[in-house]
Amino acid sequence: MLAAGARTEKHGAARPPGRAGMVESARHGAAPGEESMSHRGSWDEYFMRIAEEVSSRATCDRKHVGAVIVRDKSILATGYNGSIRGLPHCDEDGHLMEDGHCVRTIHAEANAIIQAARNGVRIEGATVYVTASPCWGCFKMIANAGLSRIVFGEFYRDPRIFRFAEQLGIALSPLHAEGAPAPPDAGGAPAPAE
Image (cartoon, rainbow, N blue to C red; front, side, top):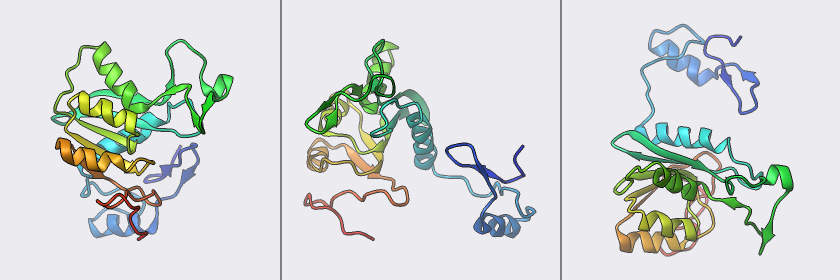
C-alpha cells in the first residue's frame, strides 16, 4: 500500500511526494505528505494526462502515442498507435519497416477518428489531445474530420502542419511535457531550446 501522497511511476514503483508538494500542502493546511486539493490542473492538462494514459496501450515500442477527442469537456473517442484490428502487433511479430518508419501500426489520431466513426459519434468542431503532434497524414485526417483544435505534447517531425493549420483555421496548441522537443517557430525552423 502506498503512503499518503505517494505517487507511482509508469512502471508501478512508488516514490515519496516531492518537497514542493509537501511545501504546497503545508501552505494550504494539509499535513506533509498529503495532497492539497487547492490546485487543479487546467482542462488541457487533464485531457492530456488522459491521452498519456491511453498511450500506455500502444503496441509499437518505437513510439507510444495516445489521442483523446473531446467536445464540451466530454470525451468522445480515444485512440493509440496499434496494428490493424485482428492482426499481430509489433510487440508480437516485430516491426514492418518502410523508409525508416514502422508501417504496421495505425496512428493514435487515426484510431480515435475511426473509433468515433464506428460508434456513430460526431466529432466536428471538437478538440484532439495527442501526446505527439500529428504527422502529415494524420493532420489531413484531423482537418477533414472537422476537428477545430489540436493540443499536442511533444513536437513530432512535420512542420507543415503549422502552415496549413493557420490556413484552415485549426488552432494548434503545444502543451509541453518537460524535456519534450519544442515545435518549430512560425517560419518552419525548429524553435530555439529554452
